Length: 306
Image (cartoon, rainbow, N blue to C red; front, top):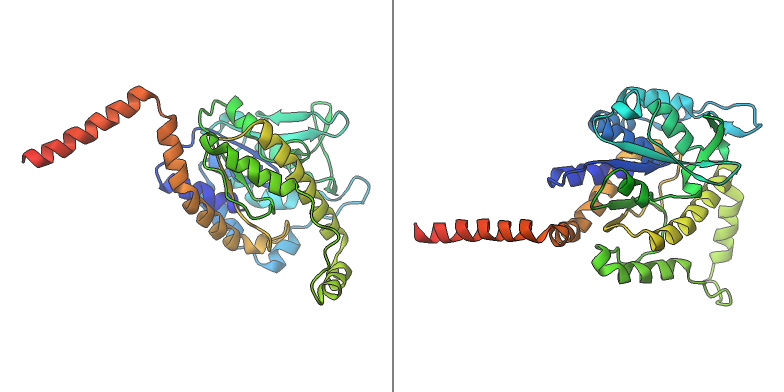
C-alpha cells in the first residue's frame, strides 16, 4: 500500500502520470489510480482493523492454494473500475504463466480478474485461469515492471519498489545509473558467513524461527525471490528514477497498517522528489528547455524594468 503514498505525492507535485503498470499488490494500487479512485481506495484500506483483515480471508481446500483472495478484492472492487481497456488512464498488470514461466502482460478484461492473477502468490493464493493459461504472481518474473510501462507509452519511467532491500543510495535516473549498480551489487553481495554473531543473536533467532508460520515462510521466501529477480531486471531495464520504500516491519497481510505504509510511501517520494524533478528537466527536449529559459528570463527582466 506504500505505492498509494508515492502516487499521491507525485500528483501533488504536479507530475503528470500518463500510464501505470503494476505487479502483485502494486497492480491493485495501480488499477485504483488508473480508475481515478485512489483517494476512496486509500480511505477504504485505512479503515481496516486487524479483525476486519481476518474476515477478508477466504480459505479454500488446500489443493493449489490456501486462499482464494476474492473476498478482499470485492471489498475494493468499486475503486478499481470495470474493464482495463475502459480505464481513464492506460493500465497493465503482470502475471506469470505457471507452466511456461513466461511473463504475461494483462491489459484487457475485468480489472478484478487481472489484478487477482497478478497477486496470486504460489502456495498462498490459488492460480487464476485466463485464456487457457494458469497464471500466478507476476513478481516471479517482473516485480518492478519498467518495460511494461514503456510499452504503455511512458517516455519517462518512475519505478517504485517496496521490497525489503538493503540500505543504499536510491538512484536518481539513468544519468546516475552507476549508483544503482553499486546498490544492486550490495544487494547481491555475499555476507560473511564466518563472522561470529553478536551476543544473544542465536537465542533471538531461535525465538523468531519458532514463531514462524506457514504464511510467514511462504511470504518471506517470495520476498527474497522477488528481490533477486528485481535486481536482475533493473540491471537490464533501468527506470529513469527508482523510488525505494523501506517496508521491513509491514507484512503482506498487515492491511490494518495501510495508513503506516502510505506515510512511508509519501516520505520516500518526498525524499526522491528533487531527483525526479532534476531528471525530468534533463530529459525534456532541448527546445522545451530553451523556451522555458526564455520565459523565465523575460519574466525576470520584466520585473526589473518595472
